[in-house]
Length: 404
Image (cartoon, rainbow, N blue to C red; front, side, top):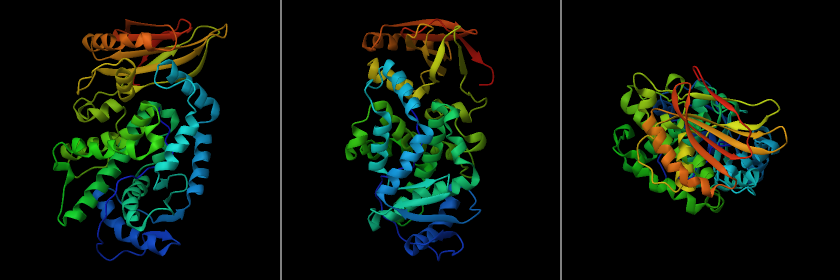
């Protein structure tokens, strides 16, 4: 359930100054922000493995300005009808209540936790006016990395809604994980007073997990959101940082996670060998053909991250720590010729053992779904697949998409 609106910063560190600043790096009417950003940018660009090509624009904004910005972004990326169909789809899968006000809860969560954000549309970085002076450096360290990233690649295009939910979350994990890793390395190094290479720290994700998991308790709106929303918001920071650390450990020169190193699925974020191995294992695209008179109200995929949430929270399954063998999926909220609605969800798996394990884990979810449901195994173009039908969905025909 990915809606990319703004970057949130919620870690609390302090850091010391560095070398004299370059006065050509920043454009800002705020002398304090400008001086601090000029000091930080050269080091952050170096740590990011990216080149700073042009000045960065900075300004302060009020919490009211943030709300107006988020409302505009919601209208653009999640208009009311799309939010309604998305909510109905996730409700039929048992992941959210059918009464969920998705736009409202996202607005509340982002308003509550955003300390600063980089806006690719205006290529400007904004810091909230209500941030204590001791937090501003931390905010800038994280968000300035996004500004440098956007000079190397088009961040908006990487998280565009037409890329699909799972690819959006995977790209957001690369973006936020990269910025989080650079931020933590810089700030920890400043506190320790000696150089630190986080790519060499063992079990890094496990070490930072308690701090990021603790955000749920610190932010009431986040804590009150359905778990699938919580996970989609926290996953990019936690698992994304682990992905980038693995990338840095296996590739020389601390490359940025873009281009051929951009993950195409949350499975590749959770298991970087699916991207960095030889050969790589990209996700398989699944297409669904509707019957005559049928109408797709909404369609997307869950991906491995949300599949895990489904199995854990709806099916109540214990999950192994490693890959599940997911290889692709597609759900469609369908309205039949007579106006009856339901949801169909097809998934494709690496092998029959992985598919059968999914079927066994998922069957207990059937009695917990809000509408009558069936689950069965099938073959999709010669590959092991699974099919879940919820409600009054008409008969549909799935197929795999070459090169998807």
